[in-house]
Every structure is written in structure tokens, then in C-alpha cells.
Image (cartoon, rainbow, N blue to C red; front, side, top):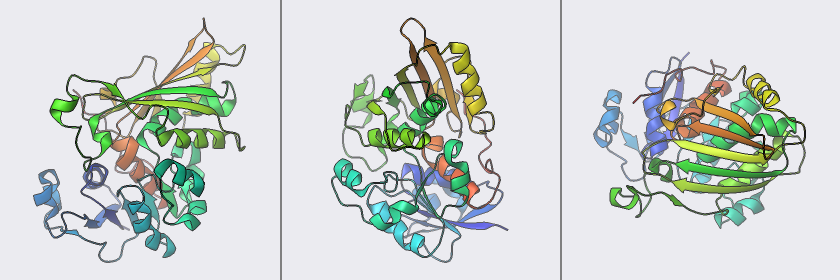
Length: 342
């Protein structure tokens, strides 16, 4: 059987990356794509690297029957577009932030508006297979993780879920320019970002409550850690590197940390524990997250690094991985590709 896939907003970076990755998928085929600004154009004319799709046309709405839908619209607009499919029982993956936060009051606090479909929040499963694989398999609505949270959560999950670190965590993360999205306004041109590194939304980024919420869920209680999250923009196209710091509980050794991480990810096809600090180029174009934990023994601190491609494991590739689980397919289908180097 070949599953029919619809992509809402193929014109954004995440949507077009999903189209690129799905081209050679063995059991799924894109049958409809939408784009608000380019409706009516051939996909290959709008984006020449997707010329392989021949006469496929970008439409204003999903056309024809589909077996699963991915939405790459901006936050809030995505929930509005997803809601009819979810209510119709069609498996849906939201790549935006709309269904990540469980509390509608938190959504309003961090995004400045009411949630468009609050009654659907309880249905959403957070789409991080390394933690929620079984729940994703039976889900009808999956909230794809944010790119920064995916890197940070995978760097911290083994330590936090095992209770070997304290509840005060610092996440210092860097991202390439594509993380801002294709439709972003000024300030992201070559002359703005070249030879420049800057922090932004310091301790006030909407990914901060997402990281805290999902870490708290790993311990199965309502208590959330105190997370300070500082994102930085660096002059590269793709990639995220998150360096996470947390005090270790007394007596925890580096050998114990290494064993814990290796055991936690032993069955995770797209997360690998590395012996040396990973580079962003080590994941370029792949769905892999590289995690490197170490211990600052002098100060009793865990220092854990997570690296991934923000458009693949941080967005479209993760959505396809979730799609595979939701449809009962091999988790690696269409994604078992090495990174591009150099």
C-alpha cells in the first residue's frame, strides 16, 4: 500500500524539505501540496530543486483524499488548518508550535493570542520518538517538536528522566538562519548576519516552556524544572547546537553518565551518543541527532551537547519519522540517509 500525503504550506522551508525527503519514500507519496502565496504554480517552477514532481501544482487547499496531513504553516494559522482534518479522523502532524504546549493559558501567555482549537490540545502527542514512540504509534494528532527543544531534550532526556541532575537547567543554543523561516521579515539578509553572532529573546523564547514541560513529563509528575534558555543566531544556513548545563546529584560519575546515555539510546535509530563533541556539519541533511554528554567533575556539572539539522530532525525529517510510526511503517523509512559533507 502507498499512503497519500498532503503537505499544507509546501512553500516554507519545512514544507519544501518534507517534499524533498518524501520523494524516495518507499510507502508514501505526496498527492497534494498547498501554499498561500504561490497557489496555481507548478511546484517545480516555484522551487526548481523539486522539479522531480513534474506537473504537481501548488493549490490553495488540500485537494483529493489523503491518508495523512502535515502542516508547516506559522503558529496559530497551523492549528486552524489542522483542525478539520483532526476532526475528520485523518492523522495529522503539526510542524508548527500550535499543539506543543498542553495548557491553553500557556499558549496565550507565550504567543499573545487564544489557541484556535483548545479542545484538541488533549489529543496531541508530543512527537519525540526517543521518548514517546508507543504513544505516537496510536496518535491521530502529533505535535512535532521545535528544533531547539528537540536538540535540548535529546541532550538532557537520559539524565533528567533518571533523576541524576537537579531541577535548574541552562540551555545555550545556536541555530542557522533557516530556523527563522522563509517568510521572516528584515534582519536576516546576508549583510545582516554574515560575520555576526547574536543572542535573542533571552530567557523569553517560546521554546523555553516547551523544554520545561517535556522534561517534566519524562518523570511522570507535574513538577517542571527551572529552565533558562538562550538562543543565538549564527551565520550558517542549517544546524543547531545546544549545550545544556545542569548540576549533578552527589556521587554521580562520568562512567555512570556514559553508560546511562548509551543504554537510553540503544534502540533509537536517529540519536547517537558520540565520544567526541559533534559538529553541526556532522548532521547536515540527515535525520540524525548527535548527543555528547560529559561531566565537569571539578564543579559537579553535567554538560550535554545535542546537535541536529533544524530542517530535518528539527522539523521535516522528524515529521516523516512520526508519520512512519503513525502509519505502522518502518521508523527509518525514507530517512536512512547519511549527512552531507562538507
